[in-house]
Each structure stands twice: as structure tokens, then as C-alpha cells.
Image 1: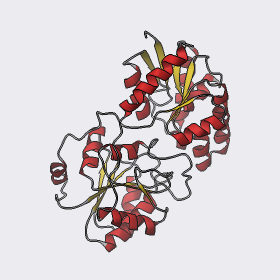
Image 2 (image 1 turned 180 degrees about the vertical axis):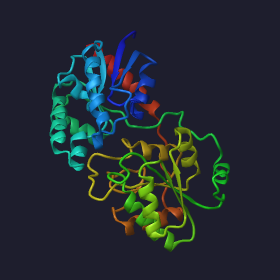
Image 3 (image 1 turned 135 degrees about the vertical axis):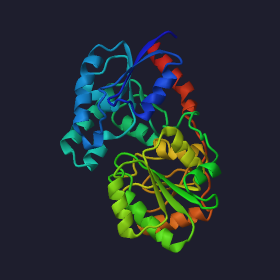
Image 4 (image 1 turned 90 degrees about the vertical axis):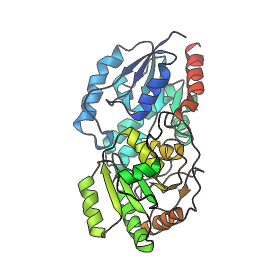
Length: 341
């Protein structure tokens, strides 16, 4: 099928989901990746980059080709009037998240964008929970395309060698948390550190490793105030090194900030959890919807610490690996059926 397709998203560089979309679509279609700007934008904090991205995307969308796959967050650049042959990808419940961060006016605007799904013939969603939300908004047909990592996500260094190269003995259990944007607001770093302090005082085994450079100074101050001893802060790491860290871990953590709703999130939309699962690691989670990919505990330091100790004792079963390429048959067929109508 010699079809030209525009893949539209606000962020530049594009989010991981859209890099995977692009890699898949270009196998079958002539794909044009359209982004808002070269300015890094953090939508949840609504910095000037997000505004610039939205403005810069407007002329691109207006001159888009006949067929398009468009990020729900970029829908504002179409003035909420979707082209007839557009497919919308729903990767996050933006109206809810903006409300959580106190952006009530922007949340209302995002809610209007989401209501436009009633005019969309085909929607892709990151998990079944978001798919149901899209249907409630009026979407006619929704396909679930989980945020699994691609098969290229694999370690390049053996686990024992990786540990030794970072000053960790081979026999020392490694407890891993992959950080990222909004580590305090969404990903529960305060609860995680308080939980680790309880676990550290209760057991003489295990080292906590936190990946990423988000809020490092805050994390260091928190670690010092709690007098945590067994930890390693890596700072920013490459995607390849994320795989090496996950491969070396004995237990992986996926907490969310107490108060954040679990209504729309599970192992299928979470890139973090899917990367843990891809390498068959046991996962301890909090404030996600139920899944057989992790053990869920209540969002408080005591229960999360007990979960950590359970994981260190080998009492959390490994997750089942899944890969993005599993989505491709459904993705290709859905687009071909839709565009052949």
C-alpha cells in the first residue's frame, strides 16, 4: 500500500511512543513525522516550550497530507476540526492530569479536545482503561496499542559486569527505580525514599538505584535528611544503559504519588513498567490499576517498604515480556481497513 501518512505530535524530539509509531509506520507507509518545535516542552508544567510547540505546529497541520495519525495532545493545533482521514492516538488522559496539577482552565480546554473524539472514526489508545474513556467521549472504534518497548531494548553488558563497573558487588541485590519528568508530582519519589529508609533499617541487603536527572538536588537533600545509606544516583542515562540497569536489577519499583488516581494507568501504558517486564523483572507498584505484571500495594511508606522486603526475599514473581512489534499487525490492518473505506 503506497500511502503517505503524517504522524503528528507536539514534542520535539518526539515522545518514545511516537518514535515507535514512526519506526513501524515507515515499514509500510511513506511516513512524515511532524513535531511542534525543537524546544523541549513539558506539558504538565506548561512551560513556554509547550506553547511554542503548539503555535509552530499550526501551519504544519494546515498543510498536512490526506492521511494522518495525530496525538490527542496536538489536537489543539487543528483547531479541534479533524481532517476526514485522521486517526487520533490517545496516550494520556490530559484533562485529568492537568486538573491534578492545578491547571483548571487548561484542563477544561483539554476536556473539549477529548470530546472531539465523538467525531473520530478510529482511535488508538495506550491501554483498555483509556480505550473505555475514549468510548465514553464518543469514539466509534478504538484499538489498544500498548506502550511496550521495541525488541531493540536489550542489555549490552552482562549483569555481573555492569554491577562491578558501578561499584556494586555481584552478590548485592539491586533495587531499581527509573525516574523521569514529574518525579515528585506523579512518580512518588518522596514515598519511595521514605519506604526505602524503612526497608534499609529492616534489612542489611539491597542497594537503591535511581535513574535520571530530575530533581537530583531535592532527592539528595531528602536522602540526607532521612540518613539513607545504601543508594546510587546515576543522573541522566542513555536508553541503552537503562536496559543494562534493568537487566542488573533484582527488583524494580513503580510508585505513584499518593492522591494520584489509578483509574487510567496500568502496565500497558507505562513505558517504565513495560521496560521492567521486557527483561522479566519482578515489579512492585502502587497507584496503578490491577495487572498480573506487578504486585500492587497501598500508597504509603509502610506498605511499600513491606513490598520491597518481600521483593528482596524473592517473593514477587517476574513479569512477562512484551514488545511493541506485537502491535504492528493490528496497527497496519486498522489503518488499511480505515483508509480503504
